[in-house]
Every structure is written in C-alpha cells, then in structure tokens.
Length: 109
Length: 119
Image (cartoon, rainbow over all chains, first blue to last red):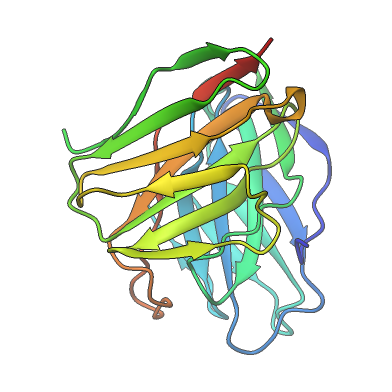
C-alpha cells in the first residue's frame, strides 16, 4: 500500500505557484520522497526527489519538513500544461514505485 | 530522441484470447517494468526485469507473463484475458534499479501506454 496521503484535487490559476502537499508520517530513515506526474493519456513523468534537504530543479521545488513527515511540491509558475495527476511516492527501493491516488491539479486560465 | 515505445497504442481482444503487448526502448537501460493502470486508478507494478533477471510482484496474477529477449524489447503476454484485465498497460525503463543517492536517481522513463479493451 502507498505510504502517502494527498488531497484528491486542487486548482491553480495560470502563472501562480501551485503548492501540492503530501503527508508521509510513517516514512523511515532511508526512504526518499519522489514526485511523478501523469498528464492525461500519457505515461508518468519524473519530477523531483529528496531525502531531507529541500531540492530544486528546472521543473519544481521540493520542500521537506524537518521531521520528514510531510512535504510540498512547488510549481513556481503553473501553466495550463501542468494540468495533471501528481503522485507523491515514498520508498527506498526504486524498483518498486508504489503509486498512491495522487492529486489531480487543474490549472485554469 | 531516445525513448520508450509501446505498440500498439490501442489493442482490442476477445475474452479468453491471448494477447501480447510490446515495448521497446532506445535508452539502453538495464531495467524494464510493466505497470497496469485501470480507469481512474494509479499505476500498479506487475513485474520488472533487471537485465535478464525477472522479478514478479507477489500479487500479479499467473495470467500475466513477460519476456525480454534482448535489452531493447520486453513483452507482456496475457494468456486468457478477462473483462477485469481491461486497462492501460505502461512500460517503463530505468538505467539501473539500484537505490538512489542524494545526488542521483535512476528515474523511470515511461512509454505512452497501450490501452487494452477486452470484449
């Protein structure tokens, strides 16, 4: 079973920051937090991952709380093309991505 | 461009008639995965190959089998499809299935999927 809890859906205005939360209160010390997204009719796409430090790449930022029990994915300037289901995944063994239900992000004009 | 290719994109089969889905990759990755994604659900890992080593998930039905004849190709065989097997089947690859380090991660690259309909 997935070890994460995410809101079912969220809305965001185009150009604004989208902040997607994820709870993972049972995360263990060697487990990472991964984010993937799935645009409609496409396969999932990797976004970012982190262990305990905040991470940033060209797609997004990942903020992990100090106790590691929750994290937030930030899309700094959401566009219509960011409309997708966003999956937060916690695991160590990267052979076994266990997807939860994810958050359906709708970016509107 | 290097990529993961799945053919066909849409497959229709009859109840009980064997069907094979194919996946190919130009990334030269060691690991290939098959996921099943039913409507409005998250992808679920069926099995994966680390090079030639096959790793089956405990709850993957025996009806599902896989072959990997070479690095580039991997096949999903459904021996006797039932109505409950209708789903999107996603193939993915990763360079190396080893655990991550803080500075690197063997991300999984997914193909566009094959949508299977069972009549």
